[in-house]
Amino acid sequence: MLKSAKLSNFTSIPSAKWEFSPGLNVIVGENGLGKSHALKALYSVLSSLKPDSSQNNSTKLERLGKSQLEKVIADELIGNMRPDSLGRLVKRKQGRNRAEVSVSFKNKELDTSFSFATNSKTQVEIDDMPSAVLAKPPVFIPTRELITLCPWFVSLFDSYSVPFEKTWRDTVLLLGAPSLRGPREKKVSELLSPIETAMGGKVEVDANGRFFLRVNGGRMESALVAEGLRKFAMLARLISTGVLLEQGYLFWDEPETNLNPKLIRVLAQVIVSLADQGIQVFIATHSVFLVREIAILTAGRKRKAQSRYFSLAASGDDEVSRLEQGSEIDELSTLVLLDEELLQSDRYMESSLHA
Image (tube, rainbow, N blue to C red; front, side):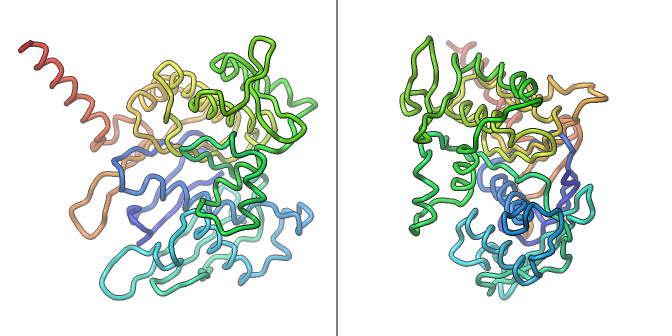
């Protein structure tokens, strides 16, 4: 479990310490204040600590030296955020500046901290070296659906210089994993049930790695399925492969995109269910409807996974944005999403009175 992260001078992300819930973490805020950057930065660090085939699934970083890990972290940041150089991720100020990142876990052997300067090209400097790897790789679901990119996208990304984020490549690779079999199938089935009901069918993969939706006894190509439902299909696949089970990490950028309110309600239920299964979930959203649904579903809970909320608001000082955080949505004094919703309601009522 990721307990906290401290980021200083890292793009538009507020220079502050983030305290995470072991269950569900929700980031809200206006465009350009650092929501997506925060998700990608955290994902990049965790992805650097995932198990590697060269380590024979060892739980220790026995074969990865400090300089190697420094290069891996830099490669992840550059691949997932796509700056011209690593130094471009440092917050803009006059003269040289330095970005600092530190993350702490429940398992202290995973604790990592590093930094890099404005003139850094392709390598960070590690200050706190981890001695273990994650039990499971993190998953990042971008705003765009990726089902229609399977299975050809991974070989394209690995063979050519293409203008896509590495998060896409990582997720497409995970989508191609085989479905889970054995004792955990029942748990998978329980998580899949509301998703398959919302989609009106089941996700299938043919021998060539192409995805279909099985509906009313027939198969529909993924490209013919509505994009919002294709996002549900991605989630269903990641559950069925076992990637999103027990101690996994899910990062999801604007999961509500292309979903109507009815499907957003299902989405909220699935997200909360994933957190209840021991998956640490991080989402960034603009949707008041989704935030409220999550708050309704998790209100007053004691034993199951708890939620934590983060609000990014515009700042008037050297920082682009400032961070507010709390265990309840009401603890955030600056919540632009809700403010705008209330203002719209006032404008609507006023226009109705003058009609």
